[in-house]
Length: 130
Image 1 (tube, rainbow, N blue to C red):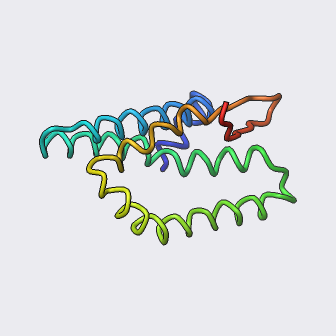
Image 2 (image 1 turned 90 degrees about the vertical axis):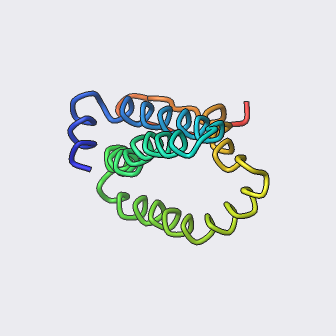
């Protein structure tokens, strides 16, 4: 996490977030197409590098986007999503895994629907199906 803060300060939070997202999605695609266990382990490590930088970067973007009076509510909503994910993830992942490898490939469409826009000093992330 300290490295993520340094990289965000040096390159910018938006750039670090986008690079982490692309790294995570590309590594997920590679995991879905892995033909051996060593390749899968290597791609999972790459996926971890991309995914590990997402949460602290998201929190930094939230802190920069919302005024101090609204930061508590923004972090509370973010925390609720973070807490629901591990509760639903294993059950949903088990059902998706029945399709053999579709679990890793499921992340790829997110890249096409996620659009990041920068307006002034605020960063807006919206989910669109265009």
